[in-house]
Image 1 (cartoon, rainbow, N blue to C red):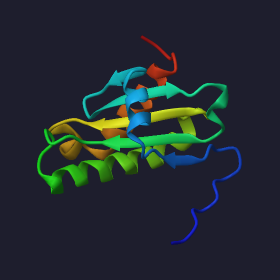
Image 2: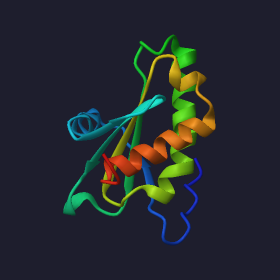
Image 3: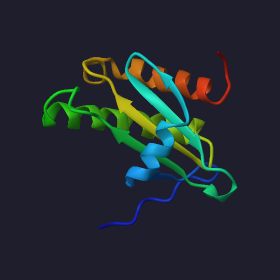
Image 4: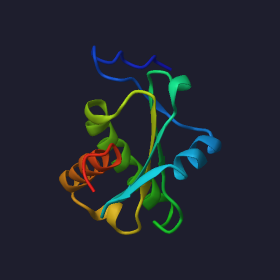
Length: 126
């Protein structure tokens, strides 16, 4: 396995969340729903470090395994595009797929959804 490529200077390092406990903590924190997905965000506090952690989840409501995997791939692509610019160090973000919408929504619209959700979660408007 090759080591991850270094992040450009000034951008936070993205890590993938894997522990169920981290997902549960994020689920009880801030959230913002968009037409394409639900964004959950949690500030880990001073002990959180500098890394930005991100997780992806799609339930069986999305569809069969092929559809769920496609939805998660799209969410990962959107996160790679938006989070390095807008994520805050020391925060956890979980993107939860929506039935029908995550797979069929235009990629540009998903990107705009995440940008708007990030602004809303970080106090950019109500």
